[in-house]
Image 1 (cartoon, rainbow, N blue to C red):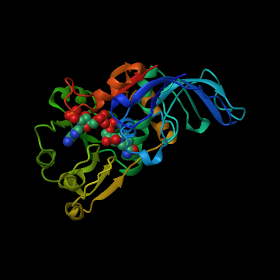
Image 2 (cartoon, helix red, strand yellow):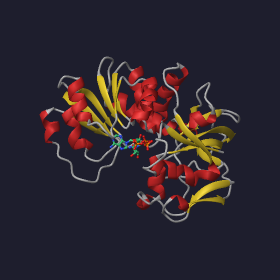
Image 3 (tube, rainbow, N blue to C red):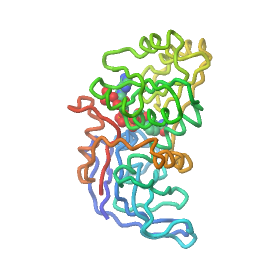
Image 4 (cartoon, rainbow, N blue to C red):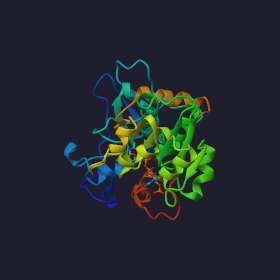
Length: 320
Ligand SMILES: NC(=O)c1ccc[n+]([C@@H]2O[C@H](COP(=O)([O-])OP(=O)(O)OC[C@H]3O[C@@H](n4cnc5c(N)ncnc54)[C@H](OP(=O)(O)O)[C@@H]3O)[C@@H](O)[C@H]2O)c1
């Protein structure tokens, strides 16, 4: 089968289209899936450039989202059969999704939501589990609360806006001016242009100094130190980003803030809630662009290029 293989860590050129052996079922709980689409996550380029080198032995195939068709099932598998359409995140650290076929455990699978194309479905698993974990499990966002989502135009941000809205929150977010109308259509109530406005000043003004109940950080940098200045008393801050530099939490202490650190791996149970929201029409995948898997280098380039001619909105998808 065709697969994208990383033989040495590096830039997008490290992704090479290679012929590898097609996997086959060796365990009674396994399922073989024909991958129809996958996506690009920052995690993929982080793996590609060697950020997780201690966890892998080269060569590797990365990729953390799959939509596809079941081809074969192990003899203990009762819930799934060949022909079923599924979507899921491959186990972190195992063989990834940038390949024609993927072998997985039946327990990692979710039924693909009705009404989605393979490309739309592949945009959801990793961010779906992540957003549910952040907003519902950790922040416990409630109807009528206010939330600030930093990085609203990204893969995580575009979904977080929709889920926060579906939960009944008042949504502030950040994004480039040219995207404001699109972010509003997703459910954002008030949007700041992070290239020209300071979100702390803006939140202070809009909330008359009270701050927001929840802040979602998909950006990193000094957010953990700064965000409490935009937070309400007893507010919650949820971050996805590993931040190597020391942070000053004095403002968090004054706000009685709670921090949550999220690193999602594989989250089928949480994806189930996302499937329900999709099928009820409350949320939809936001696909920035679709590349054939053969053009995976260009897809990575688009995600990493900070000087894109067109700003990123949602997920970059790879079709097979
Ligand atoms: N821990 C986990 O389990 C987990 C899961 C998923 C993702 N993540 C992490 O979460 C982060 C976001 O993921 P993603 O898929 O949403 O990435 P993405 O699609 O690349 O989006 C990033 C967004 O952040 C915006 N941004 C960049 N700098 C900003 C700033 N200073 N202020 C406000 N917005 C800013 C970008 O806007 P511009 O176009 O203007 O730059 C872009 O819209 C990544 O670091 C990823 O590794 C972690």
